[in-house]
Image (cartoon, rainbow, N blue to C red; front, side, top):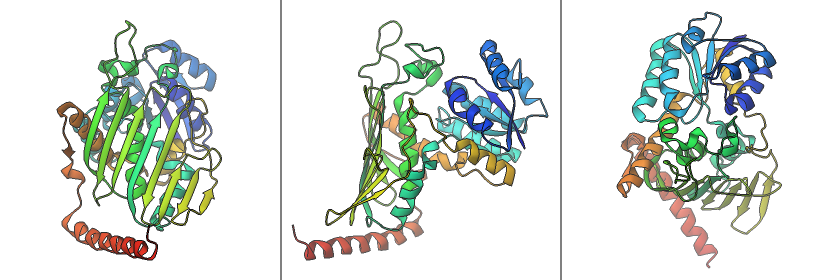
Length: 376
């Protein structure tokens, strides 16, 4: 049985962490801490457990085995490292932290203390994405050449527990980053997961097009993000992240390969559609993806508890998310400097480059053969 403390009792804790801990037979919520003590007290009264006066009090309690860190972005690293140093396992919400140095420090703290660090990149765990990864690995659309991925909705205004029209997401002093780090990070992490590849180059434009703060001025972080990525094996793709998709959420990814196309979360009924070179369609029915209005079990808590119960590294470890965070920070720099940024830490080794050269050459040969047999 894993005994859990909740640090931060806002919307993400209330709608995802708490319900999923309560649903897991191997987890027990021991207590809550929030700057708003009344909020924490309400949750303790509703679900059981106690309220701590401070983070330090919670971390000093030997009854706590692990914590969920659900605070504002700028505090992710500080609280996570504090918890790891206190001997607690940590599940931290995304984005992992607000600088690459902080992200690395979090990973190092987990290693130093012999504790697990998991990041809430939940899109890796959807049934459709797990299935899509298998299909891509099996070569159902041949070798992937390009992709496009998008995550957009009407913004975080309704996500705040106080229903504020100007949530903390819009305040740079609390969020540090905008929609790229809020929504875009999901898709950056996802495409690397699905393709078994890393982003090594980004050309990005971050803009504020529509969102206003409480004073009626444009918010201090981006509400739209547009990126062009190059993967470590030459695949090119685009990302769009937006807080200005009013009316309907978009959360799709499309891969274009040498033998066909894969569309994920685009069809109104089927989670995956595969279209071969002849135009024939194959449909895979798994489940609909979560939206802000339709919350379903994410799998994050079950995965975290399984790692703790069975003593293995979490499948979404802090270290595994570093490549995605490098791409986020490189994209921010790309927009600031108005130029393409390379990410050398994500690049292939010389051995991998030789292997890719062979694979890529085979893919080109297949593509030429198909074109010769099926001229346009």
